[in-house]
Image: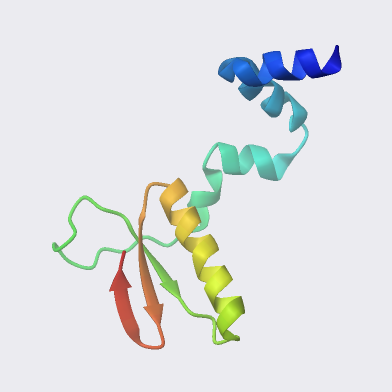
Length: 98
């Protein structure tokens, strides 16, 4: 019976969404991130007209080991994509617009 209910929930996207939200009802971090309030901590500056209308997210390597930096940059690229920004990666002084 439990498997049948779980399959039903997963097959109905809106119901699955509501249950996931209800599961995190007391999780302030989840609610803040879900409402994009975590974006308020970002510093936004204008750097010219070349990429007008786009929000670029500057990502720099952290000076740690290769694997740690690689994973950190992948996470920040995912974050930029999730928030609708364009990641700009600066790795060892080289700039790459992705």
